[in-house]
Image (cartoon, rainbow, N blue to C red):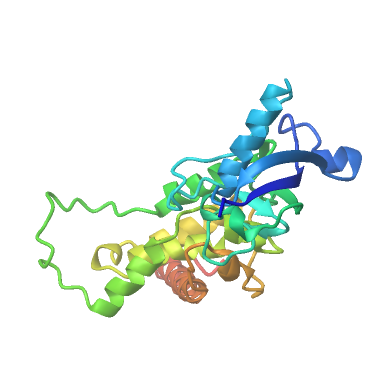
Length: 270
């Protein structure tokens, strides 16, 4: 039995420059493209490669989209597919979504992440520098620990190690932001904080780190969490919303400690 091939209609957001209007903003709809002969075993990004090859053969402008590892670990592929970040399959990045989940003749709508803090660079590519700024604000440990210690030198309870590893699975793709009706980045920030705060090395700077990263998130223009939990549903690595609760507790403690320190130093409550 031969492999199934698909002919599809793709409705794709096109935008020439960040300061130019996008396709839907100018025409009211997304421009349709026909792509033919796509193997059911191809990934979604390979399907876009095939489309671009067919466009170039017709001397048409290829579609710009982001990709890197194509193994589901880099977080680069950032597409909203039929209204869902990364597509219809739970726990799956765009590059790991395969065309066998679609049918011949399907119409597929493809757009970039929709968030004010993620401006469109071109077509399906968005600028996620805002995430880099949040990490730069405190997503690290500054203590000089010297050379690599023995793995058992600092005992870490298994429950803490498991919590840290679960949080560290975040690949920073931004699907949580794209899925949230408020464009909140709280799941991303909470995962980065949860990773470090579950380990002994992250404790000395816990309060400072929490304040710095939350304030950087707010300064970048992300919205607040209103408990829709679409972030958890869209996350390709299944990061739990429980990390948001942990971050909120840490932030409250950090702000109370900062207020008390200001009072004790004679600065008043203002």
